[in-house]
Length: 320
Image (cartoon, rainbow, N blue to C red; front, side, top):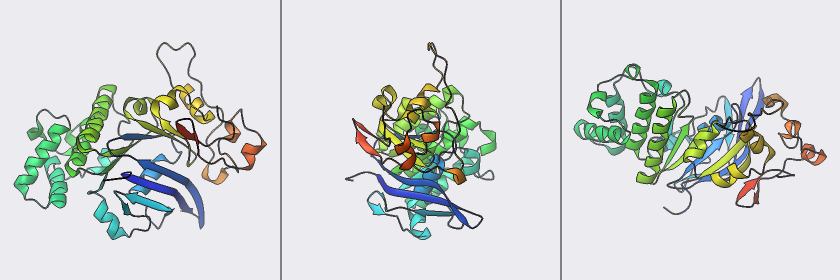
């Protein structure tokens, strides 16, 4: 495959509320490279999960209006895809790991049945072959005794084990693109590390492109090659993780990093003054301007485009 595994230009999402459209995601453009984990980070409510669901074609048309100039996955144009076209992509070319595996796993079926059904649907194989592939997928996900899990039900497993089951299902699918939406939330640090290690192994073994959605900058720093920072529905900065974390160019990114607790730090973490504006209160111009000490009249008059700066891109009239 040549070119990016996923490429989207000018993605926009608006929710239908009381006869009006309220923008949630505005003009997002990004690319995911094969064999690489890219992080999408930002505060809760900034539009990360909505972006992820839009890229998977999961937002219902009755409650959300989704559009993009271009949305290519593995070279296939899906910007105006029908529901039937999306069904042919999800579970084959693309897969998703959700924040709450309890909502993704069916409580009335065993783990073996659920992974086996995914394999049989994709590869058109019988039960015996599906069982063998299920065992391999579970082993690749870090389970030392995968046979014991085939007859287990989701409620019999811990939260961390259920998340690893979701990774096993992704491994069984062997997708070109995998979107992981807050996969480490509510997990202890040991299980977090295991989940991230399995995701990294997935990229290396199958050359999968992964979009890791997280509010935890530490998680992004541990496994992402590239990081994209979102604020109030827009990307404000993008770059390789080393450059972005060492020298953030957008004031929001800098303040976000300053809010992270660090062991042995001379200064305590500093919160960001103000609050993220509600959907009905999005200001004109730069959306971070009301909370930014560097903002001036130009910031309040027009939104800066996401432009190249150094090794990354930043949307700021007065970058750091």
